[in-house]
Length: 266
Length: 262
Image (cartoon, rainbow over all chains, first blue to last red; front, side, top):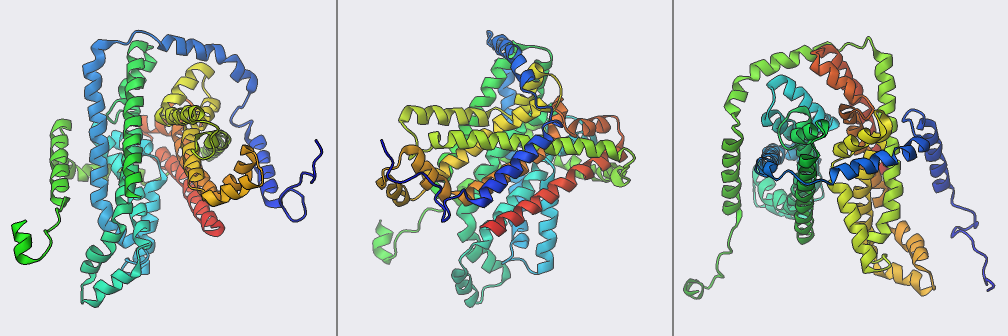
């Protein structure tokens, strides 16, 4: 078969577009340059495949059913930590977001200060804060909840503030024209318009927090993570398989629910 | 109904807010009781907490060259992880997008694969990889890559599904194959979202890479854990600053890039 037109790139000159090629080349160079520091070695990876399959073989054992009630309690604790942290963060974030949104902030200085503080709370992952709070408050779910809340406030306020910033200005003017006060304009004009976005981001954050809460136990901050790492370290595969399946199901379920919920809002 | 006829006004709509608020409040109360939390005690211990955080005020940078090396490794882990996720996401997303997938079976398989990748936490994956590959940054790279492939694949697939049908039909009308439709209608239409989500995942991976060391998967996390457990507060403070700086820098860089490119 003969081609009526020769194959060419969809640019004016027919040459590959410059920007993507340059970006790809740059990224490739960076990858090559950092390969040594992350110890990439295909040989090593291939050599470890038998160990990997061996591990997967070991994990497929009869689950330890007697552990089930305890597992249920731990999962409940994980869920409760997630819920508690999200609610606490929402209580703080809702008022704070009015200071951190460009159009509702009382002064530019307040806006910049709020944004700066928020990016600081977002900067470190939950695990680092959990480490710090565990060493300050001791083991248990409380440091976990505090770490989650702390980081969540940063994200949630940012999302809420972004929702407030894209609000339509006309209803705001309308409410203000009726002589509504500072707080009234914010509760009756800004908030109702931003509400669907806010609920959507709360669902997203709930999802994110559940994932984080399943891991916080690794540093002793409550939840299923502690049992997970202990059964891993003690080669207690009969428990590990149950925990892995339970975490998988719980996270997937919430993921689906939150997707469904957000699709309905949009 | 009688009141509606009498007053001439439509019935007052049902307001679900009180129900929701009381349900959440009840759940909070139950949770507090069940987890045996005492926030009053926390309030009383505010003084202790302040004293505790007071110990972090003198960061000690004597081992700065080691910290910088660890930091470099952390960033490299995040970069490689993100690139792996990008490659995986770009390959899987078209299969998991309803309007680009060859058939329903492939669609379901791709979706479930992405779901599974997202559902397994990256630290758990890192544990598994450390067990089979040994200590070092490589298991961290693989864990981050695998986990975030699930996220990027899902995000890209959702964006591809939102591509205007007209654009796709226009390219199809020229006799383009499925791959050509993807290359000429799919990816170019979602360029902005593509960049935004990749940067978001990059940011996330920088944060996570700082933690992977806890399970022996390389990076700065292990040093922080050790210094906290041995109560070397000045060292911990220095490490927290060392982690904080690049995260904040990358945060600002990606915000700037996004504003510039959109």
